[in-house]
Amino acid sequence: MIKQSKIYIAGHRGMVGSAILRALQSRGYTNFVLKTSTELDLRNQEAVADFFSTEKPDYVFLAAAKVGGIIANNTYKADFIYENLMIQSNIIHQSHVNGVKKLLFLGSSCIYPKLAPQPLKEEYLLTGVLEPTNEPYAIAKIAGIKMCDAYRSQYGCNFISVMPTNLYGPNDNYDLNSSHVLPALLRKFIMAKNNGETVVTIWGSGSPLREFLHADDLANACLHLMDHHDEPGIVNIGMGKDISILDLANLVKEIVGFEGKIVTDTTKPDGTPRKLMDVSKLNELGWKASISLEEGIRKVYDEIKNRDWSV
Image 1 (tube, rainbow, N blue to C red):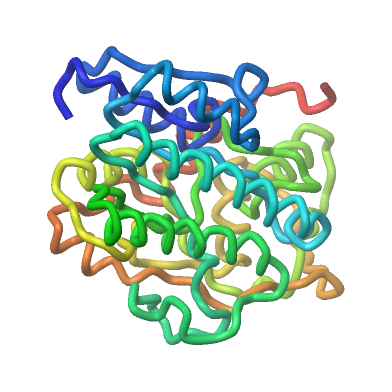
Image 2 (cartoon, rainbow, N blue to C red):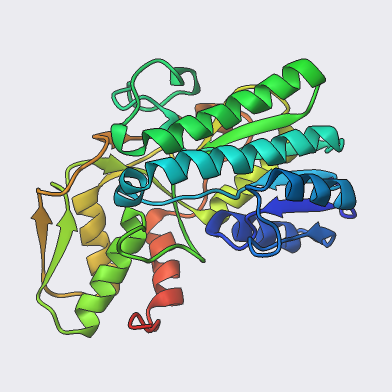
């Protein structure tokens, strides 16, 4: 990408898209085409076709998606598979039709089989049964990966796919009914501290192991791969280390300064026992994460600690 390249970031107001936009701006890129979901419904085939034929972007970051935690994924299964299939199919196809030079598709670590060996290597894709709670979302993302590879194979399109681990950072979702575990924990502990509560309850046993990456690190990895990676298949993006949910809760508790106790609710689902990315391929391509989990959570806490959660 050169500084004058026309860049389309699908989902630029979400956590991932906004991080990619910040990273590009910090490097001196200025020629962006950006549309909110009200300005452009990415599920609408005709609208997306018109947009691409008018704007003709050079590069595309496909960060738009319908996302959520365990409860949202398990409740709105039809919405998750339909909306994600439509969004990515429209963008990937129109990127081909309109001669986009390169596209980066963002998947998810949930594409891997529920009981795949750990850490998760790229070649484990489609080697086993998926986690049932987010299977529709995972199947949509797998379809996106295969679509990028198919357009590369048939038409020579330079479309690449990356699989981020669990993310957190600015513009995250803090709705307790639909958020992921880390933002949910931050909100719970901040509210408990502000309200003088003595107990915070976390979902599940606390034993599952999860990996977390700051969105700014992800964005930097995406820009690195746009410049240095041109192969089919997928590249994992992560820290390469994980933490139990209970240990994570204790870390958030310490950072927030909550002085009560943590209780586990084992009536709630744990999800996959462990999800750790093997990032050796990414490291070989010349990139490693630089924001530690504690540093990243402290940054996020400073950004949201004074938010009015009653609104």
